[in-house]
Image (cartoon, rainbow, N blue to C red; front, side, top):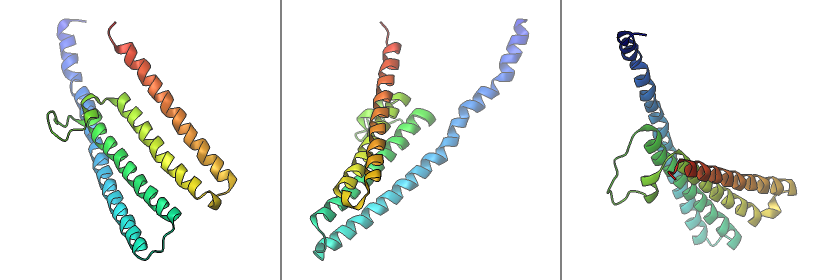
Length: 180
């Protein structure tokens, strides 16, 4: 192939890679939707907190009931934290830089985020959320049948094993890319 023909092909194909690269912006509405979902979780948190305060004022809550409501609040916070990790980390990794260097509120993990780190952080957050759900189930175990308890425990163990596999895989991949 002559040099002129190769230059022509390079110029002709240049828009395709540009369009492919620009397609990452199609994710922007997804992240905006997650921000709306986080707003819904904030609303849910306040509704539950007001409900808790009302029940405490009426002295109509048992210690177990209090524990379950507080665990529900913690669950909402953990899911909201998961949303922040996905929104901020995903945007930074897959869409565009946030340009937060030297910002006093920049999360420490954001400076070294990549798809692998994000997966490990998300897996860890999912384990935390699953742990809260499992704890709520065990506190209220009398309300569940044995089969439900077993399945929830197995699902949680599966999350833990999956997170360990993801972390181990990320460690292997990171070690393979380090210069020796």
